[in-house]
Amino acid sequence: MKKTLVLILISLLSVPGFSQTEDEPGFQLGFQFSPSIGWFKPDSEGLERDGMRVGFNFGLTADFNISKNYAFSTGLGLINTGGKINFQDVKPIGSAGVLTGGRTTADIQLNYIHVPITLKLKTNQIGYMTYFARIGFGLGVNYRAEADEEFKYPGVSETISGSELDYKDEINLLRTSLIIGLGAEYNLSGNTSLVFGASFDNGFNNVLKEDAYEEDANGNGIIGPKDKAFKAIQNQIVLNLGIIF
Image (cartoon, helix red, strand yellow):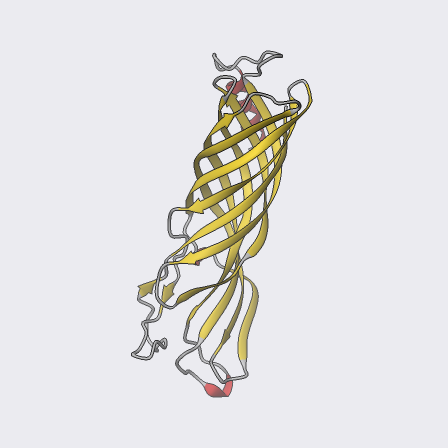
């Protein structure tokens, strides 16, 4: 994997039109480590958002400077994100057996291999600073999903809980998103700059595969097969921190 990535980057450096000069580099490679806050936005009955999750993103960044003020910006990174949800559920619990109205709360951690494809619009350098906005799309491929769960019925003190449960069967493989961000580059020397800013990564597609129990007339989950799909997109706000060369 590492050898393949190095070969790809070497190939990109040799592409005509992106030859690097001291005054205006055609290609810049960088690294980023970016804290984030993620959450789910439910779009189905019986599913509710129950909080946010702090995560982080890190990886390689690559800017292909089309001109002095425009760049095609991409990279390859790992995303650790997620969120908290609660949903109607039915499980046998201790002496209470199986009741209606039960709910499961899940704190879900999602890990993706992520490729952003964005356009970067930059100002001229002002002192040591260059300001930019960027907009584009992101594609994530899920490689791990875990959750801490707690299930309980109203009025029943007993609960069922589990930690670091495998959630891959409940999560769709792909996550697509719209990326909008603002930031700045602080020039250290030559083509080396510190990069900082913030971006909103707004999910497009449903990330959940979990099914819900149908509700009765009172809005309670009923006993029976799960036959109503949950739907939710996953969003995150990212604090972008990095360095480019």
